[in-house]
Length: 547
Image (cartoon, rainbow, N blue to C red; front, side, top):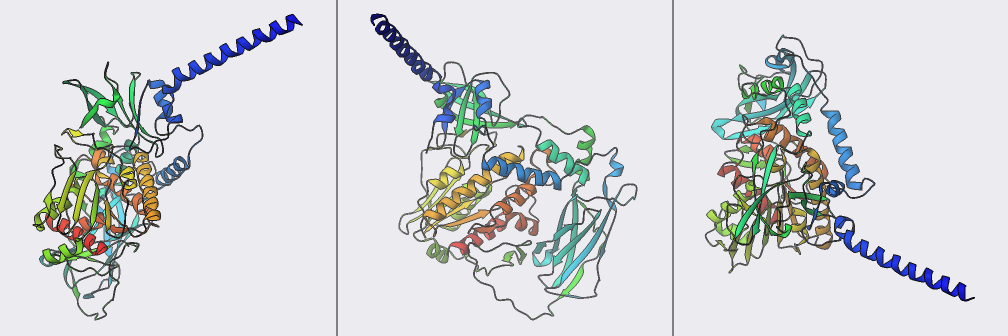
């Protein structure tokens, strides 16, 4: 009996020792798996990790793919199917605008406003051989410079070397037709492959505070290193950013960021020559005379006032006498300061995105004398900007979007957050409006980064409209930019793919669309920051949505 009691005591003692050991081990290892255990409502979670542990938490911590992961995979598979690999042995076998044949279908001596102009394009290579597949990146536009008029066209790819290019003739006058070969299908294929090869085309340099001194360290969306890392992770949205942890410096002390191009390229020399600026933007329609359009149709279409939730077609509108005219809704010209003041009275406006949206707040400050900048004691070109009119209770704010934000000028991370978290922080009501734009800063990175971000923003908008359905949400698409810039990094092909993805993901939301892609084609604005007349028309459409 005594022996049995002694045995029980020994077993009980061993169990207590084992329990204490397990508790101690758990406390020691907690920080190795922060993303599995932390649920946060802040803009991001932060911890340190080695390369081996971080690699398990980059973007996804689950052993099984999440719903978002599967959705991203499906979209990428669809894009891979639409942009197949097109190897080429020599530039002579690629699309040549000079050797291709474009002809107007059923030409007329005179056209009427509202008519459709159709052009059949048969693409050929430099040897004059008809190509047997499509996939060329084309840009179609009609214009009347003397009328300050322009509109984009619709391109239908039959995937056999022929295209149907269709224009709606919106105005009367002499109308010129332009059909540009931005990149041949072989160049498109090369750009798509190169984009998705790696995250290292941009170098991020983080600045950490260390007492009175500063310490700089390499950062990025993905880091290929065995060094200890600071991990900045949003567990809910699976957004991640990393910095190499400086010795004896806390990860919490990251204060600023700047970027520069790495000089990395995933294109071959042959592909680079194909994408050289001398081969970009060649017009198929050289030598075509303008057509004459008359005002012979007197039918007037009555449209509803522009409202959120309306579908935006392609083309979404046209410019005439410098003014934007949507094809799907009625637009009033709100250019008088008193009228705009009345429209904005009592409103909170949040502008979330890049510097093409910061142009809006600059525009408001110039046309509205009663709006004054509020000093937040921040510095730098990319600080938060706030305009206030205390008498009319108007507040307009611009804030940059979260990583990646690309500029060689240092910017503060002290108030840095993803757009999803900014949206979550908006209470919302009938006097609140949010404008979102995204794209230019994500062009150098694999497309999964952009798709995930857009899906997360879509979900944040749904949450906002559930708790506050009267809030106005406006999406400004990214715009075209300089044609003869580095195509692999920031070319318009990457922007066009993002534009299509954004239209698809947001199509069922009750939001307003400002189709800056279509608008800047119509205005032929080939610059990252569109000129003032384009910004004015974007802002006017926004005011029509909220007033």
